[in-house]
Image 1 (cartoon, helix red, strand yellow):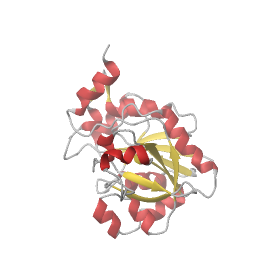
Image 2 (image 1 turned 90 degrees about the vertical axis):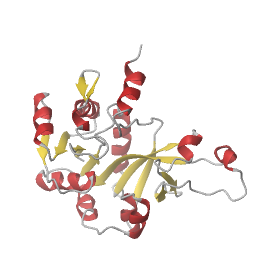
Image 3 (image 1 turned 135 degrees about the vertical axis):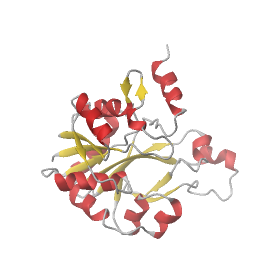
Length: 247
């Protein structure tokens, strides 16, 4: 099985324009992501997928692999699909967020290992919630999982709802999981799901993975102990630096 790791990277962002090129401790964010991903032994290839020549030139400057993709893509999934349509010879594609500069290679390996089971169509990661702020934060998608370790549903709301329990006791009485936004796909499945129209659940929740579930695709789940720290806003850079560079 040959697996490609793809890092979608856009320059234009409503919340943080130029985010991939921002400096974090002497290296750009996209370089830090790239180097973390290269640390995963299970990947046959790692490539940055961008629509901006500034990012392309920068990735080449640190000897990274990069490919230019269309500027019309609505999601990183669409950008990954273009990459595998241009580069053949891979069985599985891993879509790695370009704004998580300290993602653990072990997370990528954990996700990649799901595809040792040939029946796995799509894979992703979850992490146990232990912080009430995450549990009731609508920016933190939650997921419920079936007995086969497949996703049943993702929601920005806290699911499942506990009917006869006070909210402050929910974490005591039930195990909740948040979604870690990294995906793996069989290459043929990736090409299929990007042709699907936006679904009703996806439109309601603003979560693209619901489009796949609504159309009958199965999303295999692996549980990670590592959390991810994403850079969504300029002020997140200071938080990252304090966590990883403070003495």
